[in-house]
Amino acid sequence: MSEVKRRTAGRPPGPGKSTSGHSQSLVRGLTLLERLAATPGGLALSELAEMVELAPSTTHRLLQALQSQGFITQDTELAVWKVDVKTFRIGNSFLEARDFVATSRPFLRRLTAQTGETANLGIRDGATAVFLAQSESPQMMRMITRLGSRAPLHASGVGKALMAWLPDDEFERVLAERGLARVTENTLHTPESLRAGLAEIRRQGYACDREEHAIGLHCVAACVHNEYGTPLAAISVSGPVARIPESRLVALGELVRETAAEITARIGGQVPVVDRKTEA
Image 1: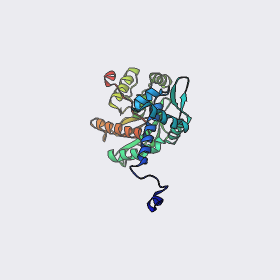
Image 2 (image 1 turned 60 degrees about the horizontal axis):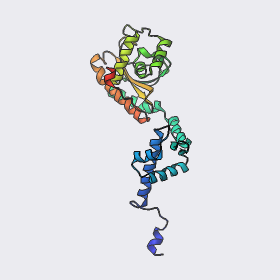
Image 3 (image 1 turned 135 degrees about the vertical axis):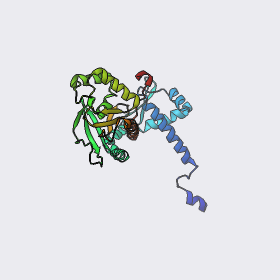
Image 4 (image 1 turned 90 degrees about the vertical axis):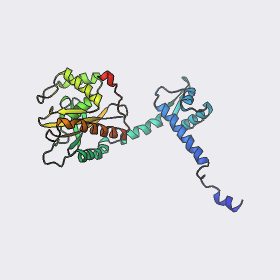
């Protein structure tokens, strides 16, 4: 063996050699896994090959490699491939490790820096919103919510942002459980007015609380969604009407909506697509 051959023997291949082939196989394998994960009922070899634009022989080889590692399994009776328990465990570990409250805190601080107002994060617990995190306004006169405190879903910005995306049966259950008590004279206290308000929230992507929970206080809020597009939490910006007049609500609402979408993307969630014509 020559000196050059002795020096290079056993080394990993350099760029542009077989490493690129391994990378290509990895990308193709992950693409197949992604397709299968999106189809719980499984897919046939021919369907997968067509989806990823690969030859059936290449697709089958990649599927066998994934199967040997426990990521997928073959249902021989139905002649389809499905994700297996190992893929589920990896996905589940991601969900367990995802702390949306910790993820949201830097965004809440950024909202306060951008608006000068208090930013909150809350979740739904039955028919109420529970506040879990907050970034306080530096202003002397500011809105402060005690962490762990609650507000009615129908009479708060965070609550309405969460309520807007509930399935119809869950919405009716909330109405039956809590009712629509008036907190202030501005509270939406009839099913008709609340439904109209929630439809508007879905259209514009954010909720407005116009002194509906406290006189003298305005709030805008938007929903953070999980991987299924269902409500996980909501963030808000709140402050006195003197600093958040009606004319400022739209700009703040769009800012909060965009921030909620950022958080949603960061935790692997997805914002539902709204048919605005249907909602109108």
